[in-house]
Length: 83
Image 1 (cartoon, rainbow, N blue to C red):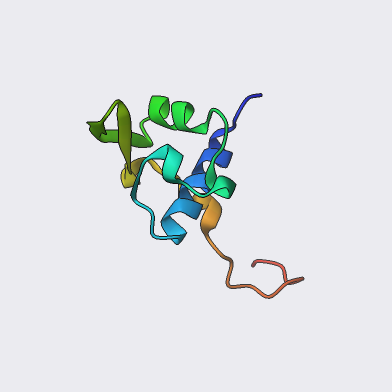
Image 2: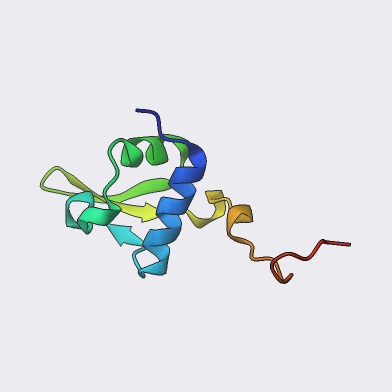
């Protein structure tokens, strides 16, 4: 299964919305664990390891790498057309 970049951005946004900026993957709630997501996010530079304890990484979100375009909310009412 391939994970798309937009899915990773949404996942990281969910982490931030819950106030999670540093984490160990095993400590995440089950609804925030995505198979293969951690590795791909690391490869894309969205996460970086800040420390290793007993072989487990503590990950930190790299905020400058996250795409914010998908989260912009339009000020228009539903059904109106932009001018």
